[in-house]
Amino acid sequence: MGTNSTCIMNRLHIVIFMAAALAAIACTSRDGAYDNGNGLIMVAGTYTDSLSRDIRRGIYTFRFDQHSGKSMPLDTFAMDNPSFLTLSEDGNTVYAVSEMPEENAAIYALKLDRSNGRLQLLNAQRTGSANPCHVSVKRKMALVSNYTGGTLSLFPLNDDGSPAPVTANYKGGTGGPDTIRQPVPHIHCSQPSPDGKYVFASDFSADRLLRLPITPDGKGLMPADTAFAVEPDSGPRHFVFSPDGKHLYLLGELSGKVTVFRYGNGILSHQQTVLADSAKGRGSADIHLSPDGRFLYTSNRIKEEGIAIFSVDENGKLTRIGYRHTAAHPRNFCITPNGKYLLVACRYGNVIQIFKRDEKCGLPEECIGEIKLERPVCIRFVHQTTSSRV
Image (cartoon, rainbow, N blue to C red; front, side, top):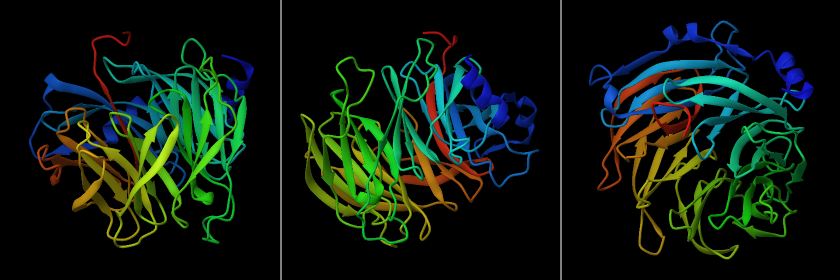
C-alpha cells in the first residue's frame, strides 16, 4: 500500500474488522431459520456519523436466501459513512464511498470473499471533493459522484482492483430554480452507457444529464461534450438503463418525476415524463428495473414514504400501477437476481425491510421479514461461490 493510502487509513481510523459486532445485528423472518441452499452475499452500507463509537460499524455482509427470504449476518467492516456501494464485475471487490467533508472524503476498495462474506481492505484514496454519494466502476476506472463538492472524480484502477489516486475532477453546473437546493453544483450519480462509449452524470443543480466520452483506451474520460436537459426544478438524482440498452430512466429528487429517454449512439431523446411522488415530498431517492425489465420502481421519502411501481410497455413507456408504503426514509433498495424479493434500506426506520414480490404483476406484497440495522442506506447482492476467485 502506498504512503497516500496509509495516511488515509491512519487519519480516518478505519482499518478495523468488527466481527464481534455481528451479535448485535438482529435478523428476523416470519418463515423461520435460514436455508443454506440458495444463498447470495448481501452487502449493506450505513450512515455512522450520528452513532456512538461502540455501535458504528459501517459495512455489513449477510448471506441471503433468495428463495426463502431468510438471512444471516457474516461480517462487518468499520468505516465512516459508507453511503453508497458498488461491486466489481467479477463480484470480488466492493467499492464504497466515505461520505465525509473534503479532508476525509474517500473511495475504499475491499476484497470480498464470496464463500464467507469476509471483507479485507485493499486501499483507499481521497476524492478531493466533499461528500461523495455514489460510485460506479467501468473496466479500469472508478467514478465517484461528490454531492457537496459538485464534481465527478475519476480513479484509474490497478491490476488488483484497488483505485490509484484521483486523476481528474469534472465540475457540475447550476441554473435550477430552487434557491435552497440548487444554488451550487451537485453531481449525484454517474453510469457508463450500455455501448461503453460514454459516461452520463446527473447534474442536480443544472437540471440536466452530462455526457462525457470515454477515452479510446477505456481508462479515462474526456470533458463533457454535451448535456441533455430535463424539466426545471427536477433535481436529477439516480438513473438506470434498460436491459436492452435502448432506454434511460431518470428520477428527479425534487420533482418526484421519472423522465424516460430513448438512447442510441450517445443521444438521449425525451419520450415521457411521469409522476412517481404524488405527495410532492421533494425527496425521491432511488430507481431500479426488475431483472426482466418489465417493471420499474422508485423510492420516495419525506412524505408518504414508500416505493412507486410502474409497468414498462414494449416501447419503454411507463404506467403507474401501485405504491407500497415502507418504514421511514426509504433511501436505497434492491431486487434479488431471481426477482422474488425487494429489499428496502430505510435509513430512519433503522431496518432493511424484505418484501415478497409478485413476479407476474410486479407488485410488492406484505413485508415478510426485517433486518435490524442502524441507518441502512445501500444494498448490493452478489452470487455466493465456494471460492473468492473466479
